Image (cartoon, rainbow, N blue to C red; front, side):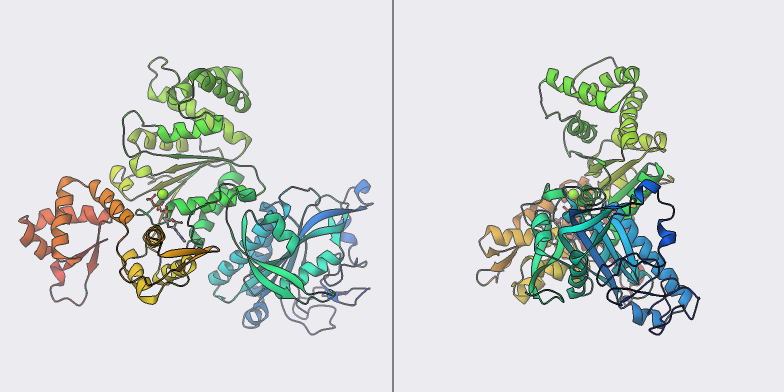
Length: 626
Ligand SMILES: Nc1ncnc2c1ncn2[C@@H]1O[C@H](COP(=O)(O)OP(=O)(O)OP(=O)(O)O)[C@@H](O)[C@H]1O
Ligand SMILES: [Mg+2]
């Protein structure tokens, strides 16, 4: 029996921990299973444990002490640590205790974020319930989202503390159960559902989540499942069919689920976790925060933001999500992305007739700006942003402060997220506004997520610098193993040589792999089979997809004329080339070439390879066309 306080393993039958003296176990009066001292119901049979629980409920309001029992539809999550005993044997008890505390904290935080209630910790297992004390329509789905998040958080925790094999496995079961609605936050579930959930949990492979039929039915619009087979569960006459939850596909109830090709989200768990945590700090402490995600075209910026959206939609807190995109062309679109966000908030369609757009704006302001004077002041300035009113020639400060006030009022009601896509094309005045907003509204729960290609840093080298409330993340190419997995998940039967060709060309940019699969589909060389694709015949001559040509052409079009000419010269020399080679071909001086090359390297059109084995190392920085 493991001590819940210090994690030390004690021989069975001991009442107190040999290491720290903590009370160890309470035998269930019904089935005799030992339970940790702080739990109220037996983890094996759900029976009430009478002794030793007095102190837990002593601070409960007297009228809530007489609990009422009723039958309710609930979803029960059971999760357990695997590999913990081996891990704790090799470690110092203090360290084990700290790890367990972090695990318990992580479980509680995650479960509560998804609107669940932790019922109890049983040793290193956790049981949580959705549907009581408050029932929501999406309880089953949220329980599965929490289970998926929990198993991935435990793997990450293991990595962090040098225990890469640490895993949690989880089971979720939905059904009617006897619920004791007593003390608030302590609605308790007992009976068969709890026992079965615990057994479903133990049927899962470490790191995975199993669910029963009702849970799957209630959540499969948003969650991808795989048949896990049937299992003989103790106490069940018939084998029970179970499903393995694979991943979250969309917002709540599958909102905005992609209909196209979407590979599973790989390798960027850590970045996603960081974005989530920064958001929670911003929301909990009401501190505005800027997260800039930088990376070349197709590297996965929008995908990271999409994963973040699915998470935000799945958590129980209400959050206001706004998204806008910068355009690469056109005049008079400086604040396009911001206007797009306001339009969405007010449900105004692009090009909507002025009168009805203005009335929608008025209504939206009425809902979010309580002070009528302030509303009157903000309204014409937002109408100006939307191009609905000319208005007097307001100066920029005047407009900025009205727009900022609007977002502050929104954020006072609930955390507000602003996602700006393709910010490499942003007009400098939009960048100014974001900086202004983060400075002036720093005590508001405003979370700004900026997605941009590296050119943003050419346009505004100081972006995010020197700000205490800013974080930047640079997305590097995915590793070769990840790219290989990505391809195999999309096209399981792709022959090895085809796969090698795609991987070589993709160079860690997932878009390239996805686009290649798109091209094969366009040409009828793949057929869909469930959620993946199978080659119809031989895929021997694999060409670069047309859309990639377009992608590369667009990137090259964005360069300055001199830079573009240099790339053309370099291309004559081949995929890799040396600076002296380029000097000879272009007729430019070494210095001129170096200046141009460093700009191209910064834009990631070229990359530098310092070759340590070359005898000409001093001037042998060879370049590779990305
Ligand atoms: N971590 C990942 N795992 C699996 N697929 C990914 C991952 N990241 C990106 N992808 C896929 O790669 C493709 C391109 O990604 P995405 O659109 O996010 O690129 P981007 O960085 O936003 O590019 P752009 O600068 O052009 O906007 C998408 O199909 C996306 O689903
Ligand atoms: Mg994008």
